[in-house]
Length: 262
Image 1: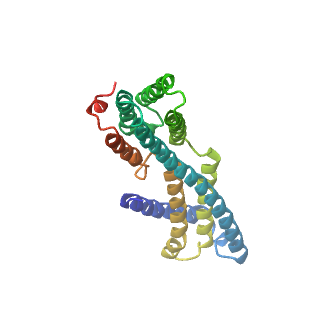
Image 2 (image 1 turned 120 degrees about the vertical axis):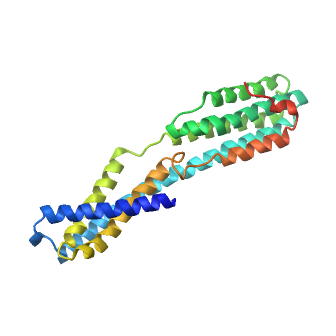
Image 3 (image 1 turned 90 degrees about the vertical axis):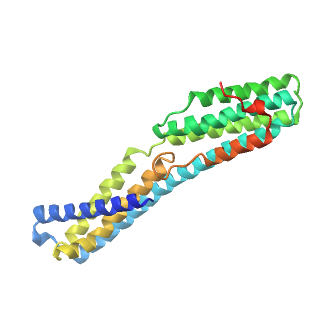
């Protein structure tokens, strides 16, 4: 969480608190306000139910975020493994495969990663993946029983599956009902807490309601961050693929492998 996000949450929490106090003082008669015992029990029950659901939604979003990180790491690891496998073939095949791996890694880092912020993919990455598959596939005529070729084809499959999963996560959204419950339920809790503290002083109400508002906003913020793993200030970076690109340069050092991509 950045400093700007913290400031925004505090300001929004204060605004939400003041708005709730103003609405309750305007529309709820004073005789209906107060911290009666039965109301406190209802508020505690609603708070527990709300916390359980928010925890479930947050765990669901966090799992997707962690899976996106894992997919990016698996994809990059496959590129690194393929660069090592390329050294087991003849010089021409090695240089050609190294070139395609470099093209793929560059397209992921510089084209597809920025495109994922809007839920899109890169045609250059698709083309690089196809060329890479054909490059290894063409070796089947001369290395049909080669264990290195078989392992490389498995790695390409893993790379494609990880990329597909990564793209799905970049455009994945929580069901609308989750947001309705989180935001609507949170506003109800804030309003109810305002009624419970309705007979206290103005500043006393702020101290009572402000924590509820901040917890609601922090929960929503965390869900937003984890729901969209490739957007915002906490977006996943292509660090793993950048390391893989450096690895390709090490294992396929021939200058011809570093020529411009198509």
